[in-house]
Image 1 (cartoon, rainbow, N blue to C red):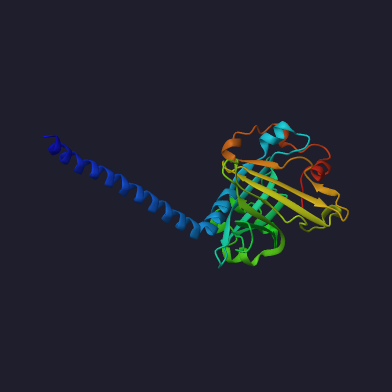
Image 2: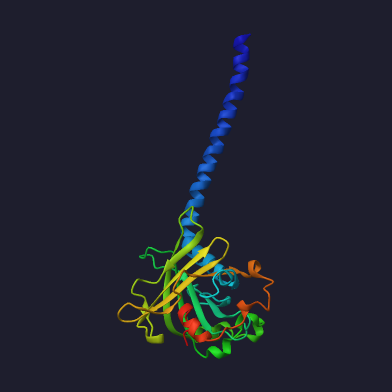
Length: 266
């Protein structure tokens, strides 16, 4: 009888074992396939994520509240503007004081694309001047039929200003991507500078940290924020801003303060 019960139990045991093995093989196979798919798509996936993270309204209100002597409550606004033939995304970007969003002091095009394969980075983020920038003011706030169309946008890409090379952040870090311009930066002549550098981090909550600096021939900083980077948080986290807060009104000698805190390039 014991032999009969063993023979009855063994098929069930083997069946369970085969099931476990098959599930394990399927999981391993799926993981390998996913890894291969991810690896083949990763260059453009990184670009898509970065472009998405840069879009929308973001504010530096919280930072300005903590340190009003060195930081202002700026509005960051960016949105898709065009797509190049090679798939590169072109975004329109502007910055303004929150109190006067219709008067941006900084306007740029961003071009987002994968880094060249030979470089040790994931995404190339280039900034360009805009031909006839006046016609692009409040681009993102307009309806699509009231904006310059994609073919016009591509034609209005003017001087290349900087390129930041971004890498996907290592696991455990609060950021998604971070990077900077090369150490020797890019040519810049604003306020006595000979070159400028930029740093940018994209956090997991879509927060953007950015720091731009200009240096003269002797390596002395002549414009840009002196302390840490500007911290722009998504609009949802900075909504319901008090319109009558002192943070939203330009103080005396505003141009002087901006010069030591943030760059305005004309």
